[in-house]
Length: 188
Image (cartoon, rainbow, N blue to C red; front, side, top):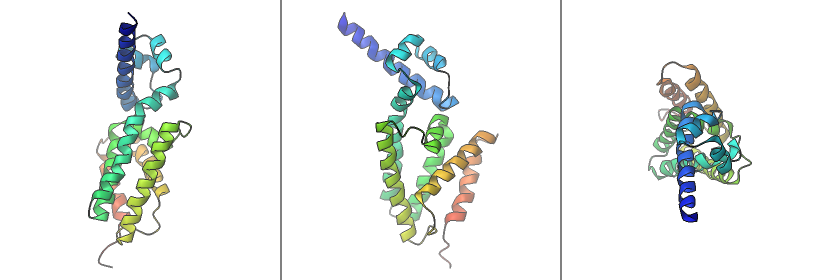
């Protein structure tokens, strides 16, 4: 009987994480926990037993997605063209923001520095972003004054574009304008 309960508990936990991922993606980090429990097919007590705080649930949901964020830099660094790697990095980052409101809020605000897993993944992702930037700058393609902190500014601005624009593709137009402003012309 104990094994059955353990299997049920695992299923409930997995259902809560899957439901939370969907609800956070749709509604952001302040989404209703009641809605998460409802979609997972469990009661609120089960949600709070597995995840005593919203922060615990957010950390569990986004630890896997932050791993994907780390991989964005690795993909960019593998591109033989430093500028194309940088452009691809920003494009995938902005696209992730556009498709997942919760991830967008997490990346734009970095408000979970007190969670060891997320903080570690964020630090790794930031190191990778710095390498992507420096590589494009060394190739003479990215303006010299651009820093990793500027990516945070761009992400906050993109979050605003995503929230305020009725056009779901507005982020792509915004990104195009940003890239034109950041690039160094080879003709100079």
